[in-house]
Image (cartoon, rainbow, N blue to C red; front, side, top):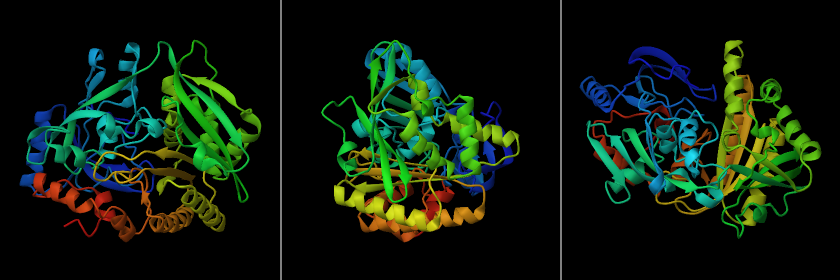
Length: 469
Protein backbone atom coordinates (compact mmCIF):
# COMPACT_ATOMS: atom_id res chain seq x y z
CA UNK A 1 0.00 0.00 0.00
CA UNK A 2 1.18 3.51 -0.78
CA UNK A 3 1.50 5.25 2.58
CA UNK A 4 1.91 8.67 0.94
CA UNK A 5 -1.34 9.21 -0.97
CA UNK A 6 0.23 12.04 -2.89
CA UNK A 7 -0.55 15.33 -1.18
CA UNK A 8 2.33 16.89 -3.09
CA UNK A 9 3.34 16.99 -6.72
CA UNK A 10 6.15 14.50 -6.31
CA UNK A 11 8.78 14.27 -9.01
CA UNK A 12 11.31 12.39 -6.92
CA UNK A 13 13.13 9.10 -7.44
CA UNK A 14 11.66 6.36 -5.31
CA UNK A 15 11.85 2.58 -5.05
CA UNK A 16 8.53 0.92 -5.84
CA UNK A 17 7.62 -2.68 -5.04
CA UNK A 18 4.90 -5.01 -6.20
CA UNK A 19 2.50 -6.07 -3.46
CA UNK A 20 3.99 -9.57 -3.62
CA UNK A 21 7.39 -8.15 -2.64
CA UNK A 22 9.16 -10.05 -5.43
CA UNK A 23 9.39 -7.23 -7.99
CA UNK A 24 10.91 -3.79 -7.48
CA UNK A 25 12.13 -0.86 -9.54
CA UNK A 26 13.28 2.71 -9.08
CA UNK A 27 11.29 5.38 -10.89
CA UNK A 28 10.50 9.06 -10.73
CA UNK A 29 6.97 9.32 -9.38
CA UNK A 30 4.50 12.19 -9.79
CA UNK A 31 1.14 12.85 -8.10
CA UNK A 32 -0.72 15.24 -10.44
CA UNK A 33 -3.69 17.00 -8.89
CA UNK A 34 -5.66 17.67 -12.07
CA UNK A 35 -6.01 16.63 -15.69
CA UNK A 36 -3.95 19.54 -17.02
CA UNK A 37 -0.93 18.38 -15.05
CA UNK A 38 -1.37 14.85 -16.44
CA UNK A 39 -1.26 16.33 -19.94
CA UNK A 40 1.93 18.20 -19.07
CA UNK A 41 3.58 15.02 -17.82
CA UNK A 42 2.70 13.23 -21.06
CA UNK A 43 4.18 16.12 -23.01
CA UNK A 44 7.34 15.93 -20.90
CA UNK A 45 7.59 12.21 -21.63
CA UNK A 46 7.16 12.66 -25.39
CA UNK A 47 9.75 15.43 -25.65
CA UNK A 48 12.32 13.60 -23.54
CA UNK A 49 11.63 10.08 -24.84
CA UNK A 50 10.58 8.83 -21.42
CA UNK A 51 8.44 5.82 -20.63
CA UNK A 52 5.35 6.24 -18.46
CA UNK A 53 3.34 3.84 -16.32
CA UNK A 54 0.62 4.33 -13.71
CA UNK A 55 0.51 3.33 -10.08
CA UNK A 56 -2.65 3.25 -7.98
CA UNK A 57 -2.59 1.91 -4.44
CA UNK A 58 0.40 -0.36 -5.05
CA UNK A 59 -1.57 -3.65 -4.92
CA UNK A 60 -0.42 -5.29 -8.14
CA UNK A 61 1.03 -8.69 -7.30
CA UNK A 62 3.12 -8.81 -10.44
CA UNK A 63 4.89 -5.93 -12.19
CA UNK A 64 1.72 -4.35 -13.67
CA UNK A 65 2.30 -1.10 -11.76
CA UNK A 66 6.06 -0.82 -12.29
CA UNK A 67 8.59 0.61 -14.70
CA UNK A 68 12.07 2.08 -14.31
CA UNK A 69 11.43 5.55 -15.65
CA UNK A 70 8.38 7.70 -14.86
CA UNK A 71 5.38 6.69 -12.76
CA UNK A 72 2.15 8.66 -12.42
CA UNK A 73 -0.16 8.17 -9.43
CA UNK A 74 -3.69 9.57 -9.76
CA UNK A 75 -4.41 9.37 -6.03
CA UNK A 76 -5.08 13.12 -5.83
CA UNK A 77 -7.76 12.88 -8.56
CA UNK A 78 -10.24 11.25 -6.21
CA UNK A 79 -13.66 12.93 -6.37
CA UNK A 80 -16.82 10.88 -5.68
CA UNK A 81 -20.24 12.03 -6.93
CA UNK A 82 -23.31 9.88 -6.23
CA UNK A 83 -26.24 10.02 -8.67
CA UNK A 84 -28.74 8.03 -6.61
CA UNK A 85 -31.69 8.80 -8.90
CA UNK A 86 -30.08 6.87 -11.77
CA UNK A 87 -28.19 4.39 -9.56
CA UNK A 88 -24.75 5.56 -10.65
CA UNK A 89 -21.58 6.96 -9.12
CA UNK A 90 -18.89 9.01 -10.86
CA UNK A 91 -15.42 8.84 -9.34
CA UNK A 92 -11.91 10.07 -10.01
CA UNK A 93 -9.37 7.50 -11.09
CA UNK A 94 -7.64 7.86 -7.73
CA UNK A 95 -10.73 7.29 -5.53
CA UNK A 96 -10.36 4.19 -3.37
CA UNK A 97 -13.06 1.55 -3.10
CA UNK A 98 -13.55 1.89 0.66
CA UNK A 99 -14.50 5.55 0.15
CA UNK A 100 -16.72 4.76 -2.83
CA UNK A 101 -18.69 2.17 -0.84
CA UNK A 102 -18.99 4.57 2.08
CA UNK A 103 -20.42 7.24 -0.24
CA UNK A 104 -23.07 5.10 -1.96
CA UNK A 105 -24.24 2.82 0.87
CA UNK A 106 -26.43 5.47 2.61
CA UNK A 107 -28.58 5.42 -0.56
CA UNK A 108 -29.00 1.61 -0.28
CA UNK A 109 -26.75 1.23 -3.30
CA UNK A 110 -23.51 -0.72 -3.75
CA UNK A 111 -21.02 -1.24 -6.57
CA UNK A 112 -21.63 -4.72 -8.00
CA UNK A 113 -17.95 -5.69 -8.13
CA UNK A 114 -15.44 -4.52 -5.53
CA UNK A 115 -11.95 -5.92 -5.13
CA UNK A 116 -11.02 -7.51 -1.79
CA UNK A 117 -9.16 -4.55 -0.29
CA UNK A 118 -10.67 -1.12 0.12
CA UNK A 119 -7.39 0.69 -0.59
CA UNK A 120 -7.33 -0.14 -4.32
CA UNK A 121 -8.11 2.80 -6.61
CA UNK A 122 -10.94 2.73 -9.14
CA UNK A 123 -8.50 3.50 -11.95
CA UNK A 124 -6.32 0.60 -10.85
CA UNK A 125 -9.16 -1.91 -10.70
CA UNK A 126 -10.55 -0.70 -14.06
CA UNK A 127 -7.14 -1.30 -15.62
CA UNK A 128 -7.34 -4.89 -14.38
CA UNK A 129 -11.07 -5.51 -14.99
CA UNK A 130 -11.25 -7.02 -11.53
CA UNK A 131 -13.48 -9.78 -10.24
CA UNK A 132 -14.98 -10.34 -6.80
CA UNK A 133 -16.91 -12.98 -4.91
CA UNK A 134 -20.06 -11.63 -6.58
CA UNK A 135 -18.64 -12.25 -10.05
CA UNK A 136 -20.46 -15.61 -10.46
CA UNK A 137 -23.74 -13.71 -10.77
CA UNK A 138 -22.60 -10.23 -11.82
CA UNK A 139 -19.51 -10.78 -13.94
CA UNK A 140 -16.40 -8.63 -13.76
CA UNK A 141 -15.97 -4.93 -13.12
CA UNK A 142 -16.08 -3.91 -16.78
CA UNK A 143 -19.69 -5.01 -17.10
CA UNK A 144 -20.70 -2.30 -14.62
CA UNK A 145 -18.71 0.57 -16.12
CA UNK A 146 -21.02 2.94 -17.97
CA UNK A 147 -18.25 5.19 -19.29
CA UNK A 148 -14.90 6.74 -18.46
CA UNK A 149 -12.67 9.70 -19.33
CA UNK A 150 -9.12 8.92 -20.39
CA UNK A 151 -6.18 11.15 -21.26
CA UNK A 152 -4.31 9.35 -24.02
CA UNK A 153 -0.59 9.71 -24.68
CA UNK A 154 -1.17 12.61 -27.10
CA UNK A 155 -2.72 14.64 -24.27
CA UNK A 156 -6.30 14.39 -25.57
CA UNK A 157 -9.17 13.83 -23.11
CA UNK A 158 -11.48 11.20 -24.59
CA UNK A 159 -14.90 10.03 -23.41
CA UNK A 160 -15.24 6.25 -23.78
CA UNK A 161 -18.31 4.06 -23.64
CA UNK A 162 -19.80 1.13 -25.52
CA UNK A 163 -20.93 3.56 -28.22
CA UNK A 164 -18.24 6.28 -28.17
CA UNK A 165 -14.57 5.45 -28.70
CA UNK A 166 -15.63 1.84 -28.22
CA UNK A 167 -12.24 0.51 -29.31
CA UNK A 168 -10.60 2.29 -26.38
CA UNK A 169 -13.41 1.25 -24.04
CA UNK A 170 -12.86 -2.46 -24.67
CA UNK A 171 -9.05 -2.18 -24.74
CA UNK A 172 -8.43 0.07 -21.72
CA UNK A 173 -10.71 -1.88 -19.35
CA UNK A 174 -8.32 -4.63 -18.32
CA UNK A 175 -5.57 -2.97 -20.39
CA UNK A 176 -3.10 -2.36 -17.51
CA UNK A 177 -2.63 1.34 -18.20
CA UNK A 178 -1.41 0.83 -21.77
CA UNK A 179 -3.73 3.48 -23.25
CA UNK A 180 -3.60 6.46 -20.92
CA UNK A 181 -4.64 7.96 -17.60
CA UNK A 182 -8.22 7.12 -16.62
CA UNK A 183 -9.22 10.23 -14.69
CA UNK A 184 -12.98 9.70 -14.30
CA UNK A 185 -15.25 6.62 -14.25
CA UNK A 186 -19.02 6.26 -14.05
CA UNK A 187 -20.31 2.99 -12.59
CA UNK A 188 -23.79 1.52 -12.57
CA UNK A 189 -24.82 0.45 -9.07
CA UNK A 190 -26.95 -2.28 -7.50
CA UNK A 191 -29.81 -1.57 -5.11
CA UNK A 192 -29.71 -3.44 -1.78
CA UNK A 193 -32.16 -3.63 1.16
CA UNK A 194 -32.14 -1.13 4.00
CA UNK A 195 -29.73 -2.16 6.79
CA UNK A 196 -28.07 -4.41 4.22
CA UNK A 197 -25.41 -6.85 5.29
CA UNK A 198 -23.91 -9.95 3.69
CA UNK A 199 -25.54 -13.23 4.68
CA UNK A 200 -23.42 -16.34 4.13
CA UNK A 201 -24.48 -19.97 4.32
CA UNK A 202 -21.48 -22.31 4.65
CA UNK A 203 -21.90 -25.83 3.29
CA UNK A 204 -19.12 -28.29 4.20
CA UNK A 205 -18.28 -31.40 2.19
CA UNK A 206 -15.55 -33.93 2.88
CA UNK A 207 -14.53 -34.19 -0.79
CA UNK A 208 -14.86 -32.26 -4.03
CA UNK A 209 -16.90 -34.80 -5.99
CA UNK A 210 -19.79 -32.36 -6.48
CA UNK A 211 -17.76 -29.16 -6.57
CA UNK A 212 -18.33 -28.51 -10.29
CA UNK A 213 -22.07 -28.18 -9.61
CA UNK A 214 -21.85 -26.67 -6.12
CA UNK A 215 -20.12 -23.51 -7.35
CA UNK A 216 -22.45 -22.77 -10.24
CA UNK A 217 -24.96 -20.00 -9.45
CA UNK A 218 -28.39 -21.39 -8.62
CA UNK A 219 -31.94 -20.38 -9.46
CA UNK A 220 -31.77 -17.44 -7.05
CA UNK A 221 -29.79 -14.93 -9.12
CA UNK A 222 -29.15 -12.72 -6.07
CA UNK A 223 -27.02 -15.44 -4.44
CA UNK A 224 -23.37 -15.83 -5.34
CA UNK A 225 -21.24 -18.89 -4.62
CA UNK A 226 -17.56 -19.60 -4.03
CA UNK A 227 -15.66 -22.38 -2.30
CA UNK A 228 -12.53 -22.42 -0.11
CA UNK A 229 -10.48 -25.59 0.36
CA UNK A 230 -8.85 -27.43 3.18
CA UNK A 231 -6.34 -29.94 1.80
CA UNK A 232 -5.65 -33.17 3.68
CA UNK A 233 -3.24 -35.46 1.83
CA UNK A 234 -4.79 -36.16 -1.55
CA UNK A 235 -8.25 -35.05 -0.45
CA UNK A 236 -9.88 -31.64 -0.87
CA UNK A 237 -12.44 -30.66 1.76
CA UNK A 238 -14.69 -27.87 0.53
CA UNK A 239 -16.36 -25.01 2.38
CA UNK A 240 -18.83 -23.65 -0.15
CA UNK A 241 -20.21 -20.22 0.71
CA UNK A 242 -23.58 -19.06 -0.62
CA UNK A 243 -23.78 -15.29 -0.13
CA UNK A 244 -26.32 -12.53 -0.69
CA UNK A 245 -27.18 -9.00 0.37
CA UNK A 246 -29.94 -9.10 2.97
CA UNK A 247 -31.64 -6.67 5.34
CA UNK A 248 -30.41 -8.00 8.67
CA UNK A 249 -30.47 -5.98 11.92
CA UNK A 250 -28.04 -8.22 13.83
CA UNK A 251 -24.51 -9.36 13.11
CA UNK A 252 -22.97 -12.81 13.35
CA UNK A 253 -19.59 -12.17 11.72
CA UNK A 254 -17.27 -14.81 10.32
CA UNK A 255 -13.68 -14.55 11.58
CA UNK A 256 -12.06 -14.31 8.10
CA UNK A 257 -14.36 -11.34 7.45
CA UNK A 258 -13.05 -9.36 10.45
CA UNK A 259 -9.87 -7.77 9.09
CA UNK A 260 -9.24 -5.64 12.18
CA UNK A 261 -9.16 -8.41 14.80
CA UNK A 262 -5.86 -8.88 16.62
CA UNK A 263 -6.18 -12.61 16.01
CA UNK A 264 -6.35 -11.88 12.27
CA UNK A 265 -3.06 -9.99 12.48
CA UNK A 266 -1.49 -12.88 14.40
CA UNK A 267 -2.76 -15.37 11.81
CA UNK A 268 -1.27 -13.32 8.96
CA UNK A 269 2.12 -13.20 10.71
CA UNK A 270 2.07 -16.93 11.45
CA UNK A 271 1.26 -17.81 7.83
CA UNK A 272 4.06 -15.52 6.67
CA UNK A 273 6.58 -17.21 8.95
CA UNK A 274 5.25 -20.75 8.57
CA UNK A 275 3.49 -21.22 5.20
CA UNK A 276 1.98 -24.57 6.23
CA UNK A 277 -0.11 -22.66 8.80
CA UNK A 278 -2.40 -21.55 5.97
CA UNK A 279 -3.79 -25.03 5.40
CA UNK A 280 -3.88 -25.66 9.17
CA UNK A 281 -6.12 -22.61 9.46
CA UNK A 282 -8.50 -23.73 6.69
CA UNK A 283 -8.71 -27.27 8.05
CA UNK A 284 -9.40 -25.87 11.52
CA UNK A 285 -12.15 -23.75 9.98
CA UNK A 286 -13.59 -26.87 8.36
CA UNK A 287 -13.37 -29.19 11.38
CA UNK A 288 -13.96 -26.87 14.32
CA UNK A 289 -15.04 -23.33 13.49
CA UNK A 290 -17.82 -23.76 10.95
CA UNK A 291 -20.81 -25.91 11.77
CA UNK A 292 -22.81 -27.86 9.21
CA UNK A 293 -24.95 -25.44 7.17
CA UNK A 294 -23.98 -22.54 9.42
CA UNK A 295 -25.07 -18.96 8.62
CA UNK A 296 -23.12 -15.75 9.18
CA UNK A 297 -24.06 -12.07 8.92
CA UNK A 298 -21.21 -9.65 8.13
CA UNK A 299 -21.00 -5.88 7.59
CA UNK A 300 -20.69 -5.18 3.87
CA UNK A 301 -17.34 -3.41 4.16
CA UNK A 302 -15.65 -6.11 6.26
CA UNK A 303 -16.97 -8.94 4.08
CA UNK A 304 -15.96 -7.14 0.90
CA UNK A 305 -12.56 -5.86 2.00
CA UNK A 306 -11.55 -8.93 3.98
CA UNK A 307 -7.97 -8.72 2.66
CA UNK A 308 -7.48 -5.45 4.53
CA UNK A 309 -6.29 -7.71 7.33
CA UNK A 310 -3.35 -8.73 5.16
CA UNK A 311 -2.69 -5.09 4.25
CA UNK A 312 -2.55 -4.06 7.90
CA UNK A 313 -0.28 -6.99 8.81
CA UNK A 314 2.04 -6.07 5.95
CA UNK A 315 2.16 -2.44 7.13
CA UNK A 316 2.90 -3.48 10.71
CA UNK A 317 5.55 -5.90 9.47
CA UNK A 318 7.26 -3.11 7.52
CA UNK A 319 7.42 -0.99 10.69
CA UNK A 320 8.99 -3.94 12.53
CA UNK A 321 11.43 -4.68 9.72
CA UNK A 322 9.59 -7.88 8.71
CA UNK A 323 8.99 -8.34 5.00
CA UNK A 324 5.83 -10.08 3.85
CA UNK A 325 6.17 -11.84 0.52
CA UNK A 326 3.36 -13.62 -1.28
CA UNK A 327 2.47 -15.10 -4.63
CA UNK A 328 -1.08 -15.34 -5.96
CA UNK A 329 -2.07 -16.80 -9.30
CA UNK A 330 -5.48 -17.56 -10.82
CA UNK A 331 -6.25 -20.11 -13.53
CA UNK A 332 -9.48 -20.00 -15.51
CA UNK A 333 -10.44 -23.55 -16.53
CA UNK A 334 -13.20 -24.18 -19.13
CA UNK A 335 -16.32 -25.10 -17.20
CA UNK A 336 -16.90 -28.81 -17.22
CA UNK A 337 -16.52 -31.50 -14.58
CA UNK A 338 -13.73 -33.40 -16.30
CA UNK A 339 -11.54 -30.31 -16.75
CA UNK A 340 -11.98 -29.18 -13.16
CA UNK A 341 -11.31 -32.58 -11.61
CA UNK A 342 -8.25 -33.16 -13.79
CA UNK A 343 -6.78 -29.76 -12.97
CA UNK A 344 -7.41 -30.23 -9.24
CA UNK A 345 -5.77 -33.66 -9.29
CA UNK A 346 -2.70 -32.27 -11.07
CA UNK A 347 -2.63 -29.33 -8.66
CA UNK A 348 -2.49 -31.65 -5.64
CA UNK A 349 0.22 -33.75 -7.28
CA UNK A 350 2.42 -30.77 -8.21
CA UNK A 351 2.01 -29.00 -4.87
CA UNK A 352 2.87 -32.19 -2.97
CA UNK A 353 5.99 -32.77 -5.04
CA UNK A 354 7.15 -29.19 -4.51
CA UNK A 355 6.40 -29.36 -0.77
CA UNK A 356 4.88 -25.89 -0.96
CA UNK A 357 1.38 -25.90 0.58
CA UNK A 358 -0.81 -22.94 -0.43
CA UNK A 359 -1.80 -20.47 2.26
CA UNK A 360 -5.19 -20.33 0.58
CA UNK A 361 -6.90 -21.96 -2.39
CA UNK A 362 -10.40 -21.19 -3.58
CA UNK A 363 -12.58 -21.35 -6.67
CA UNK A 364 -15.57 -19.58 -8.16
CA UNK A 365 -17.35 -19.56 -11.49
CA UNK A 366 -16.78 -16.68 -13.91
CA UNK A 367 -19.44 -16.17 -16.60
CA UNK A 368 -18.49 -15.22 -20.14
CA UNK A 369 -17.38 -11.59 -20.24
CA UNK A 370 -17.99 -8.84 -22.77
CA UNK A 371 -15.33 -8.42 -25.45
CA UNK A 372 -12.73 -6.72 -23.24
CA UNK A 373 -9.58 -7.64 -25.10
CA UNK A 374 -7.41 -8.99 -22.29
CA UNK A 375 -10.24 -10.54 -20.28
CA UNK A 376 -9.62 -14.16 -19.32
CA UNK A 377 -13.29 -14.89 -20.04
CA UNK A 378 -14.03 -12.89 -23.19
CA UNK A 379 -14.55 -16.07 -25.21
CA UNK A 380 -15.97 -18.46 -22.62
CA UNK A 381 -16.85 -18.75 -18.95
CA UNK A 382 -14.88 -20.94 -16.60
CA UNK A 383 -13.86 -21.94 -13.10
CA UNK A 384 -11.41 -19.41 -11.62
CA UNK A 385 -9.09 -21.33 -9.31
CA UNK A 386 -6.89 -19.04 -7.19
CA UNK A 387 -3.86 -20.04 -5.12
CA UNK A 388 -1.96 -17.94 -2.62
CA UNK A 389 1.48 -18.77 -1.22
CA UNK A 390 3.36 -17.03 1.56
CA UNK A 391 7.13 -17.19 1.81
CA UNK A 392 10.07 -15.14 3.02
CA UNK A 393 12.93 -16.54 0.91
CA UNK A 394 13.99 -16.73 -2.72
CA UNK A 395 14.48 -20.50 -2.71
CA UNK A 396 10.82 -21.04 -1.84
CA UNK A 397 9.82 -18.53 -4.51
CA UNK A 398 11.67 -20.56 -7.14
CA UNK A 399 9.82 -23.71 -6.04
CA UNK A 400 6.49 -21.93 -6.24
CA UNK A 401 7.41 -20.44 -9.61
CA UNK A 402 8.24 -23.88 -11.01
CA UNK A 403 4.97 -25.34 -9.68
CA UNK A 404 2.87 -22.52 -11.13
CA UNK A 405 4.62 -22.76 -14.50
CA UNK A 406 3.71 -26.47 -14.61
CA UNK A 407 0.10 -25.68 -13.74
CA UNK A 408 0.04 -22.93 -16.38
CA UNK A 409 1.10 -25.50 -18.97
CA UNK A 410 -1.76 -27.79 -17.90
CA UNK A 411 -4.18 -24.86 -18.02
CA UNK A 412 -2.96 -24.19 -21.57
CA UNK A 413 -3.52 -27.84 -22.54
CA UNK A 414 -7.11 -27.56 -21.29
CA UNK A 415 -7.66 -24.43 -23.45
CA UNK A 416 -7.93 -22.30 -20.32
CA UNK A 417 -6.21 -19.03 -19.51
CA UNK A 418 -4.00 -17.67 -16.77
CA UNK A 419 -5.87 -14.70 -15.31
CA UNK A 420 -3.63 -11.66 -15.84
CA UNK A 421 -4.70 -9.74 -12.74
CA UNK A 422 -2.40 -11.32 -10.17
CA UNK A 423 0.97 -13.02 -10.63
CA UNK A 424 1.62 -14.56 -14.02
CA UNK A 425 4.27 -17.22 -13.60
CA UNK A 426 4.11 -18.97 -16.93
CA UNK A 427 6.12 -19.29 -20.12
CA UNK A 428 5.46 -16.26 -22.36
CA UNK A 429 4.69 -18.51 -25.32
CA UNK A 430 1.83 -20.09 -23.39
CA UNK A 431 0.38 -16.72 -22.34
CA UNK A 432 0.67 -15.35 -25.87
CA UNK A 433 -1.08 -18.42 -27.27
CA UNK A 434 -3.84 -18.17 -24.67
CA UNK A 435 -4.58 -14.57 -25.70
CA UNK A 436 -3.66 -14.85 -29.39
CA UNK A 437 -7.19 -14.10 -30.65
CA UNK A 438 -7.20 -10.57 -29.23
CA UNK A 439 -3.54 -9.54 -28.94
CA UNK A 440 -3.22 -8.22 -32.52
CA UNK A 441 -6.23 -5.93 -32.00
CA UNK A 442 -5.01 -4.86 -28.55
CA UNK A 443 -1.62 -3.74 -29.84
CA UNK A 444 -3.08 -2.16 -32.97
CA UNK A 445 -5.26 0.07 -30.75
CA UNK A 446 -2.23 0.82 -28.59
CA UNK A 447 -0.27 1.99 -31.65
CA UNK A 448 -3.24 4.12 -32.73
CA UNK A 449 -3.44 6.06 -29.45
CA UNK A 450 0.22 5.83 -28.39
CA UNK A 451 2.23 5.91 -31.64
CA UNK A 452 5.40 7.03 -29.84
CA UNK A 453 5.18 4.15 -27.38
CA UNK A 454 5.57 6.27 -24.25
CA UNK A 455 3.18 4.13 -22.17
CA UNK A 456 5.07 1.03 -21.05
CA UNK A 457 5.03 -1.31 -18.09
CA UNK A 458 7.32 -4.14 -17.13
CA UNK A 459 4.48 -6.66 -16.99
CA UNK A 460 3.26 -6.29 -20.58
CA UNK A 461 6.86 -6.22 -21.83
CA UNK A 462 7.57 -9.53 -20.09
CA UNK A 463 4.48 -11.60 -20.91
CA UNK A 464 3.91 -10.43 -24.51
CA UNK A 465 7.49 -10.07 -25.81
CA UNK A 466 6.58 -10.87 -29.44
CA UNK A 467 4.13 -7.97 -29.59
CA UNK A 468 6.15 -5.28 -27.81
CA UNK A 469 8.39 -3.30 -30.13
